[in-house]
Length: 141
Image (spheres, rainbow, N blue to C red):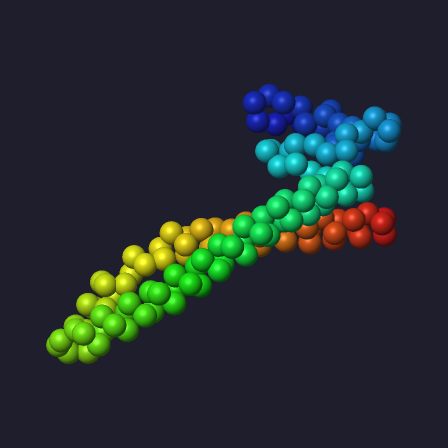
């Protein structure tokens, strides 16, 4: 049977057949498939988990300092909002608008830095969870 482009797919070996042809000792511990690293044995997974743990440990202090800075800036923003609201004249909506204009830039960089670090930590945590699940699955197999 000839497929698209004149290729005879019936003669091509399957991935499983290719994998069986290579001795297990010669197989790579991790490989890249369409730009994604796949972890195919426990040693590769453990090495990746150790790297993730080190990354989390180095980012933890930065996250804590950034969180402290953001929560202080958030308090300053809320205070500036309250002061501007009290000092403003007009309807409630006009006063809210003036208060927002007076306070919205306070702590903007601190918030962005905190949210970015928090997102990175979530990704690292998710990767660690996936790695642990892969280790468990490979132990059962």
